[in-house]
Image (cartoon, rainbow, N blue to C red):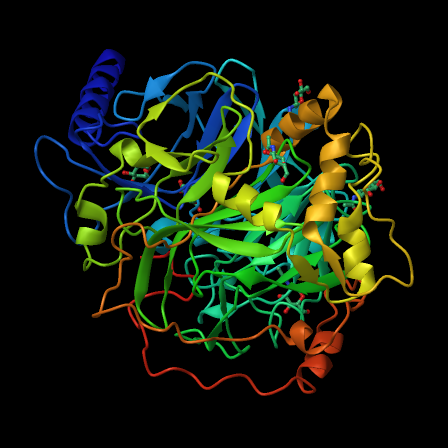
Length: 571
Ligand SMILES: *[C@@H]1O[C@H](CO)[C@@H](O)[C@H](O)[C@H]1NC(C)=O
Ligand SMILES: *[C@@H]1O[C@H](CO)[C@@H](O)[C@H](O)[C@H]1NC(C)=O
Ligand SMILES: *[C@@H]1O[C@H](CO)[C@@H](O)[C@H](O)[C@H]1NC(C)=O
Ligand SMILES: *[C@@H]1O[C@H](CO)[C@@H](O)[C@H](O)[C@H]1NC(C)=O
Ligand SMILES: *[C@@H]1O[C@H](CO)[C@@H](O)[C@H](O)[C@H]1NC(C)=O
Ligand SMILES: CC(=O)N[C@H]1CO[C@H](CO)[C@@H](O)[C@@H]1O
């Protein structure tokens, strides 16, 4: 009897294995179709990819149209200490006890070689009732491409418990603290009736294990909402480094708001000090990206004392444009350049990017929404295994990864721009001062040469960038700074890419449309920086009263995209 039961159990499990086991987390590159919504982090010699969904061919059959994608149930890793080709790279699969979610936040704690995840949606809304809100999952790498998941209770679980679980916030790790700006809640992120944009700046201090929620009302948008924008920590400037928040879509606070009521404009950039939480704003010049969401970003320190943020791809739900272009923002020059380099990968959204091998941007996953459902998933990604690599100095896409560590230099176009020495039209002396010298304490080494402009109260609103760059160059000869730069890239996680003229700017309906200028950050209206509302733990009353004083939002566009969740990721 007993052995019969045992025998039948074995048979059953063999059957189950046989019928479902063909779906795998790491299919061959021939069977691979698409991956999307993965969160990516670099820890030591490995890139980790966590969460998200994958579509694949099984036994020569494309996936069913009603359910083309499946959650990636393990955490994946790739060795970046060795060279590989995207089509034949070895991808490790690490068991994951945590719920698998899509478009979640990932925050890297390099001091313990680990990362935390938070938020995200459950594929097809299947497991929203399994989300526990009082604890959080942490992955600790073992240094050999694997690692372990543990569950941690924060120091203020009661606060975490009250948080609305959302997806598609703008995510960055600044030193010991993870940030998440905006996001969209829906029946796929937690059990709820309506899709709901979530305003606010969620943060998790990894030292104190404390969660917090600051207001973003009137800062990132009129109502403080932001979906599928990006955040980048720029460690080089300001007393504590600065977190830049770029792009994305904005909403009113009404439930079921779709499409967005606006898209954020890239010609003005917003950033905040991660410790003081004071927000600033600065105008840019050059060729700003057209408004977009669902793009990726990376930030990288040059050996010349400057810092560049690259963005790649994304979509604009209002104008129905789908991008595969790359733009670079120079800091402290505040000039945008469009990169003239075709990715060959087609338009892409909901991918993530990180810097590997010193100066290569790795783009992971993403779907091409120029095609209809389910082809979004079932048409194979032109990037083998969904992996694209851009050399950030040479601005060249490849499908081969060269593990030789190369030091990043600004691309020629950026160096030419700085050589012209154009002045920056600073928002205020305070903002100018943030960029006049490098962050002390964070970036070791000499602080600029004799030409470094001395910040002073009487300084006017423009300082030649050439002078700044030149001054910084003087101080950059130390190996210490190069080491620091390396340290910082390694801390970086994501990259963005923007839409370029690269060959074919992917325009869905006819010729390039003059992108509808969406929501212009309110902060632009005021000339200087502003002190944000102070920390409040879930004080909805304060937030609600603020709302009524906000300017009316822009009219809702008629170009709705009803098939899509607001964040633009859930399918
Ligand atoms: C992941 O697990 C879920 C639930 O068991 C399953 O439906 C899905 O097919 C799995 N994903 C893959 C890629 O095998
Ligand atoms: C979700 O919870 C149910 C019980 O409430 C359990 O049966 C199921 O296995 C859980 N699913 C996952 C993916 O954890
Ligand atoms: C942060 O606070 C705002 C205002 O009270 C609230 O609407 C939002 O839901 C909070 N964020 C989270 C993640 O709960
Ligand atoms: C996190 O907490 C530690 C300890 O209180 C503090 O020193 C650090 O500045 C905090 N980080 C941020 C970004 O506020
Ligand atoms: C640093 O900047 C100077 C002046 O703009 C330029 O001549 C030089 O080529 C740059 N060097 C590197 C390594 O980018
Ligand atoms: C990129 C980065 O910061 N890497 C550091 C992470 O921490 C380990 C030690 O814990 C250092 O060896 C790395 O240089």
